[in-house]
Image (cartoon, rainbow, N blue to C red; front, side, top):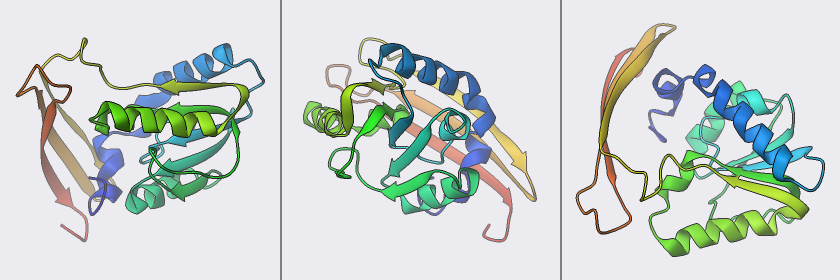
Length: 188
C-alpha cells in the first residue's frame, strides 16, 4: 500500500475519517505545549490524512519514508512541506513548536526504534514544545480483531479485509494481514 498501491490509499482510508482524530491531536498539542503552536513536524505522515485537517491551524512539515505516499500527500496538501525521511534518523536542522507521530509509530517493533523516534522528536522541538505519539494500540490494549471496508472513487474501487492477530503474546509485536480487491483504474 505504501509503494505501488499508494494512489489507492484514500480508498482504503479516506481523509474525512480523520477529522475528529486530527482535531483531538491539535487540541492536545496546543494544550500541552508551553509555547504557542504555529509549526508542527509530522513524522510518518503517510498519505497526509491528518494534515488535510491540521494544515488549517498549523504550518506543517510532513516526513515519511515512502516517496509514493509523500507524492500522494502532495496532491492533498500542496501547501505543506513534504520530505523523505525515517522517523528514527531524520535530522532537518531546525525546530518546530510541536511534533506529531500518528499510527506509523506501530511499525517500530523494538524499544530501541521507539527511543530513536522519540529522540528525533526531541531534537526537532523548540524549548517548551510538545510531542504527541498516537499508536493504534500498545501491548496492554491490543486485542485481536478483523475489519473490512473500502471506498468507491472516480473510475476505481477498493475493498479490503484486515485481520490483526498476535502469534506470540509474550513479545511486543503483532501481525496484520490484508486482502485487497481492486477494481478499475488504468493500472489494474
